[in-house]
Image (cartoon, rainbow, N blue to C red):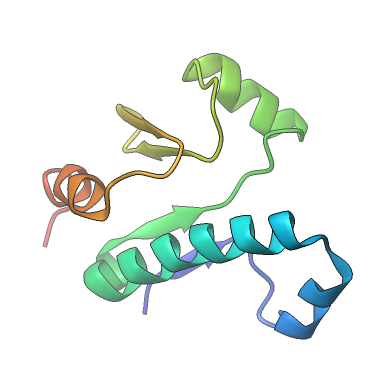
Length: 99
């Protein structure tokens, strides 16, 4: 399976119990999207998770003019803000992935 950069392999879902319900729900929505994309594209896709409040995240926010989060950037060219339609983001990725 492809790589999920930014996620620890020792991730334990029991840690989510420490967070408010809204944060857990947000985490689950984003996780479902990322896992679905990773399963669909496998080794042909590299996902990078960046905290928008980190220095790199601030740079990406300015560079890609992101104003709503989560924000998904495909190949540095296509931007999806908020929760994208899975088929729409798959198409954007498929158009740029070499098999």
